[in-house]
Amino acid sequence: MSAPAGTVALVQHALVNIRTSSNYSPNHTQYNIILNHTENPNNANDGTSGWSSSYVDQNQYIVLGGDVPKEIVAVATQGRGDFDQWITSYKIRWSLDNVSWFDYNGGQVINANNDRNSIVTFNLPTPLLCRSLSIHPVTWNGHISCRLEVYAQPLKQTYVQQGQVYTGDNGALNAGPDGAREIKVQVTFPKKFRTVPQVAITFDQLDISNAKNIRSGVQPQNITTSGFEARFYTWSDTRCYSLRADYIAVEEI
Image (cartoon, rainbow, N blue to C red; front, side, top):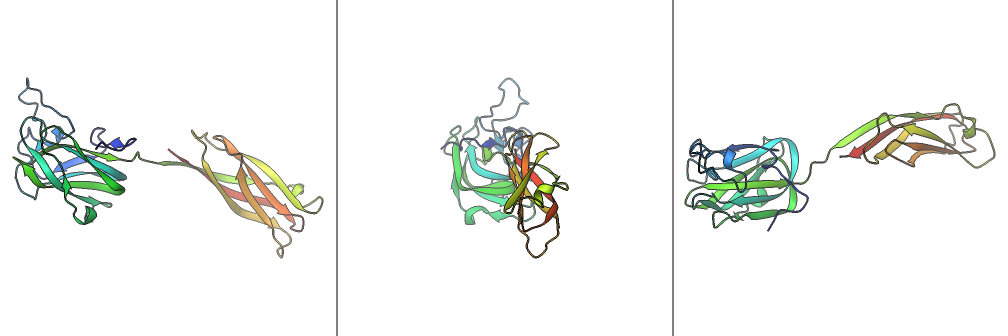
């Protein structure tokens, strides 16, 4: 099985720090752990085709983590490319705060490889939100050695702008025929968004003479990357002199 489409390879793109429990030698470190890595046969100092532990027991592990939480969706493993050494099964542990650690799915043992170069991908049924993830070999062939990749959902961030909009002392809200009254105020964002944002708006101040009967509202409309219209509305029996509202505009990037 391959990794889900649209995911990000964290090891390939250097989006995680990698630490191992032990290294067989300076030529067998996590620097060789990326999928399909092969050593240069013409350079004896180039390392090996994969990571290999120094000790061969169930206390070995690989930690991949960082400061930013990620939604992990898949783990792919591969054997060592230049020897018949590979992990045949492993467990996953994870942490959201890099302090408290938990067994994935109650300590589930995940099947891995049975040769040097085939890639075996474990797709998590539900994305796992964590800052750090660790791989713990349970069984292996020959020696604890592997190449691997961890896939995550693309990181979503938000860009936020906020401000105020004011009707001014506008007679359209407190004069005129009975019934509904409204005014629209054009708002221009301080900086243009790349895509159309979500906008929320709420009253900050109401200047109203009849406190017993208040029917007023505000809503954003005609939202673009540059701004929006703030529609203030009321009723003729609510004596509105001015209204002021706070808005927040959020773009997901």
